[in-house]
Image (cartoon, rainbow, N blue to C red; front, side):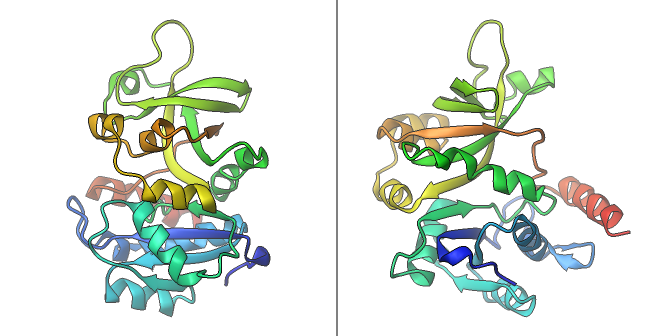
Amino acid sequence: MNNGKGGETLVLIPARLASTRLPGKPLADIAGLPMIVQVAKRAEEADVGRIIVAVDDQRTFDVVEAAGYEVVMTRADHQSGSDRIFEALTKVDPEGRAKIVINVQGDLPTIDPETIRAALRPLEDPAVDIATLTVEIVDEHEKTNPNVVKVVGSPISDSRLRALYFTRATAPHGAGPLYHHIGLYAYRRAALERFVALSPSTLEKRESLEQLRALEAGMRIDVEVVKTVPLGVDTQADLDKARLILSASSN
């Protein structure tokens, strides 16, 4: 089921079974398939590279393997998805053939494959270390909601920003658009290796946003502007919504 693309791009999907708000969510049924398999299918539809699911539990491993996708077991004590995908990377590609790694969160079962493809576009500029995504905020409530992470960036084009900061505050001040950050990343392999070797930074700990570690270390993050925020499944209500979306699309 994997598209090799010469092995230069890997799509790594971290899946953690012990979710606090929705226990066992990678295995939750959505339109007849476990959620983690639905995410792998979206990555397959994006057709950008080899797909590997990084799991921390044998039940998830077995489900992904049975669906025909490549899967690797990782430690259960990782503090972040980036740490999990780096462990997976070193296991599945120890010789270093892969040059770009896309981290697609395992709780995005309805993500548009084009959104995954969009994350690669900023890496066309060799000066960019890490690429990620954003959507312009249209809901006034989101502008002041600390759970909505904002990108503060300098426009490069109509569809791209160079990230200067990420924050839970309402920023920047003054007239103009605000941008909702989408936590899907494409890393150059060397950038991911450098990032996971860094200690948590001051602003990262203050904002509880690990991407600030990269900015504080002088790494360049560019942000592609897309049209919609993918539905992240964190609660039962989110799961019910995802089931409605994918059941409707399969009919």
